[in-house]
Amino acid sequence: MDEVTTLPLSGLLLMRPQVYTDDRGYFFEVSRNSELTQLLGDLDFVQESQSGSHQHVLRGLHYQLNKPQAKLLRVLTGRIFDVVVDLRQQSASFGQWFGIELCSEKKQQLFIPAGFAHGFLTLSSYAEIAYKTDQYYDPASERAIRWDDAQLAIQWPLTCDPIVSTKDAKAHSFASADKMGSDHIIC
Image (cartoon, rainbow, N blue to C red):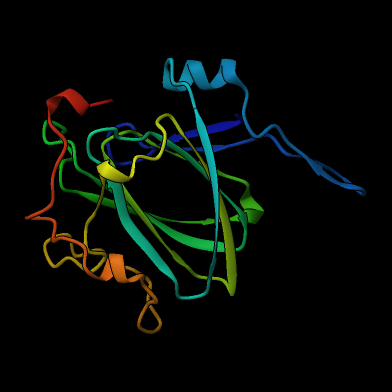
């Protein structure tokens, strides 16, 4: 990674690769295990997923309780507003949220430690994101917090009512949601 920025919530990182361009196009390394190990410790990414979303689609805020996932996320096409919420009760940033606009043109990657809820709003007409996780998807452990929770008061850059899934519309409030115990603190 050419540039690594520590973001306001504990363990959250924004990484920008060195991009080589010429008249043919561009090239960059998406990841290199030796660099990731130096930055993130001994994480083993075991699953890679991809999603596509139309404009105004809001996904989240999702997390896994018993098998929390660290994620390395990047935007392949389009533009999103990405949001994370720290659910680690022993963390100095517990209950705080952070949002950042990510786009395919900048080729940035966002590292989200285990113990965070995650969601995003599609800003462009269409967006695709890819993310690696260090734990497999576990439906029994899946949880969600309402995207419009009054206590969190996330400042989504909405221009109209977002499009949310039925499951996300029925998600718990932050106050009633399951949180991470001290055994899930990763800094």
